[in-house]
Image 1: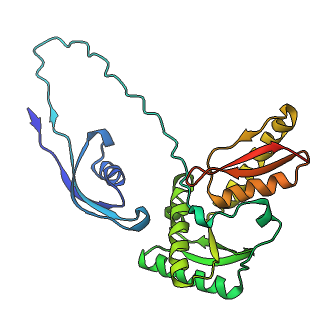
Image 2 (image 1 turned 60 degrees about the horizontal axis):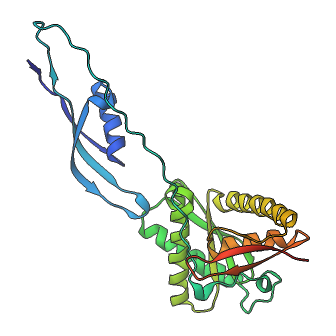
Image 3 (image 1 turned 120 degrees about the vertical axis):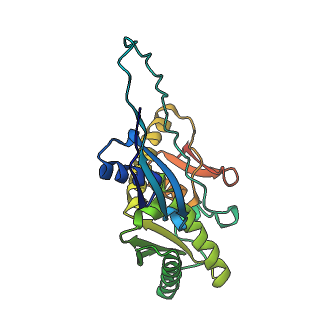
Length: 261
């Protein structure tokens, strides 16, 4: 005999969230809930909504005629989380991550006017995406304007391992290059991600430098975006006995830490 199903409609940010909400309202576990997507709206940066019809799975009442048989254990699939490499977000023509730039010999120097223009540009994109976030300048570094994004939806703009933030930064730089063409570039941060990432890169550079000095052999790092390669260059400048240079083409350009003065 089959027990009738109870059906409700749920609107949520994702199917998983809708399923969890339905389970709570129906008073069952998520494993006992079936959902059918009625409508799904996609938004920028992963922000959207979904409307589903949720119901409890039909339950069968067993007839007590036969002796119960032992169930075989269902195999559990082991799901390994695959680390997604961060995209190289700087085109080769814009890569100036050499020691010369670190010493300050750059042709372009960002100004407050540049910061105001880029802030307005990013805010415009955020408004179009209907994201609850704002941006403000936090400083300058040669031709780079540092912008910090704050607000309720900042997590959408960072993403896993910063991949959304890197892609958004690349998009803004492409737009800025077309609109202004002055060589000024932007470095976006959200939720203090860049600061935490910079600290991790500095620690890594220091540890590898120690091994390079000890073994007197070069070490080649994994491919990094240009603004992260600069962090490594700057960290190594402060360590005696090693030097750095970059080799390769985007998106596989890498920093080499080598024995030196």
